[in-house]
Image (tube, rainbow, N blue to C red; front, side, top):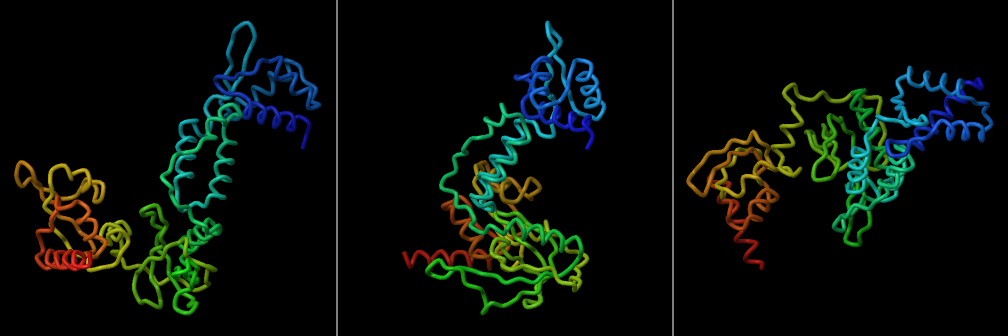
Length: 322
C-alpha cells in the first residue's frame, strides 16, 4: 500500500473514531496526530486528503470559525439506531450472554469513542433467560444458505429431561428436512419446512438443532399456495392443532389484545356498548384456550360450538385438579 493510501486510511479511522458533532478536531490537532503516527503532514496535504474523503462519499463536516474544525457527520447508523440495536441484542433470548457482549462491542465500533460510552448501558430485563447454545448463529446462517440454494438439511434435535440435561429425540434420530422459511415468534427462532420422517410441514426450534449439515439433495418443493405468514397466524403461538375459524366475544378494552395477537386486519364487529366480536383463524389447541382463559372471563368463545365445548371441558378438568 502506498504512503498516501496509508495516510488516507489513518485519517479516516481517526475521524471516525474520535470525532462527532460534539467533538470536532481542529486542523492543528489532526496534523499533530498524523505526525505522531509518522506521517509527514501540512495544511495543503491535509486539505487534499480531506477533499479525497469528501469525494469518496464520507460525510465530512467543517466548522468554520477562528480555526477550522472537522468531524464525521452522517454515519451508516445514527446513535439512536445503535442504541435500539444494543437494546434488541441485550433483550433477545435467542442470543447468548457471551454473544450479546461480543455484538454490543462490535456495535460500539460503529460510532465515535465519545458516543460509544452511551451504548455501554444495561437494559433492564426481568430475569430474561438467554440461550446457552453458542452455535445458534452459525445454524441460522446455514439454514439461510440451504433455503437460498433449495437444499435439504440434516440435523439432530434435542429436548431436556427432568434433570435439565439435553437429550436427543427418538434415540438420536437424524432428521432430513426441507427448509422453507425462518420464523421469529415469541423471541424464539423456528425453521419451517417439510420433514421426511413426519411426512408433512412442521417447525423446529433453531436453538435446539444440533449438528446441522447441508445435503446435496434438493428440497421437497413447498406447495404452490404455501404462505409462511398464513401458517404463523393459523398455528397459534407455534403449537399444532386443528386449524379453524373461531368467533370470540370480547369486552371493548380487549381490542388492543386482539390486534396485538391477530393484527389490524382482524375481522371484528360491535355487539353492544360493552362488547365486540372477533373472527380469528387459529389452531384450537390448549395454548389457544390458555390464552383465552388468561382474560378471566372477559373473552369468550362463542363459535363453533364444538370448540366452545372443548374449551369448557378443559377448564372444568383444570378446575377439578386445583
